[in-house]
Image (cartoon, rainbow, N blue to C red; front, side, top):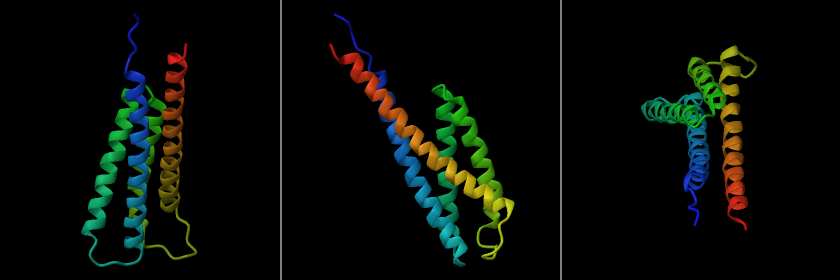
Length: 136
């Protein structure tokens, strides 16, 4: 009797959880930037949210390196750096100004949206492969 590995199930769940947590982090980042841009005076909570989201996204990049998705991890690290570099411009530009920092933030946000889709696809493909392996 051949024993089945549980690794594909763990990988599928890991990719799915990573995608869901990243979606949550992106919503929190958007909400924090919205409050900062709106001119709120008490921003300690927003900056705490941003720090926690950076910790999660950095952890995700390390996890991607560890599970042999090094390119995804590398691009994530670059996107985090671009977001950190550009975050100082949030709330300080007029409606007609497009600065490189604003483009960097937008690019980082779009990268993580794309990464959510990639993680969802990886979760789906691992599950599909596991299903093919189980069928007689």
